[in-house]
Image 1 (tube, rainbow, N blue to C red):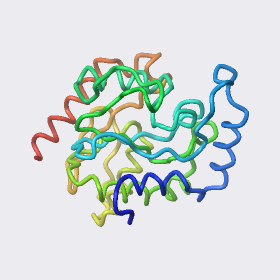
Image 2: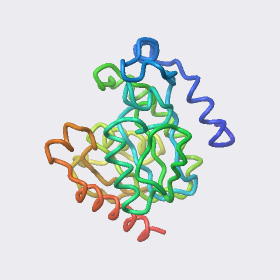
Image 3: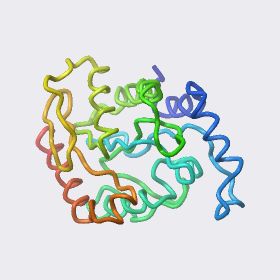
Image 4: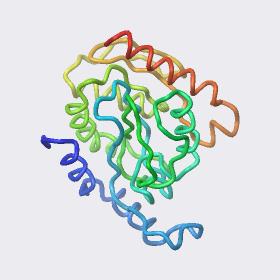
Length: 229
């Protein structure tokens, strides 16, 4: 295991385990979107970031092709991130409401954000094999994030990945398997899972996930962490 989070980040960014993801992330970085034609894309796996003393781990799906795959920081530079970071600021987890690029001064307090899959997948749909190939990176992250008290899962894919993460940490598989739902809390060791609809445009533009709903889930995550501290 990497001795520090910085060493782990360096290892993550060199990963080439999944040929399909490597090919796609690099093609997107080479071809680029017209709006970002003048920018140099990151085009590599995206590590987690945040407060190393975080009690709340926020687990997303995967980097966006022209978001984190461009900027090098998860949820940074895309509409989902705009929605998420505004909520993190309103609930005092972030020092500012926007996230544009990796050097924009954003800092998180008591939260760490990572993804179930570290490379941008075609059509935003990683395969189960790709999810499982990425799992050891999150296991290694959690070994360093010793203060985590709750995992906030953004979407059903992240919920499923968190259950697998829990099993990889040595906890028995639950029977029956807990089902994902928005604001659903599954309280178990070594940390509870809290579900939240993913802040994708598919959910935010339709009103399935509103700012008030996201704020409430983030505040509940803090409350759960407080109760377990």
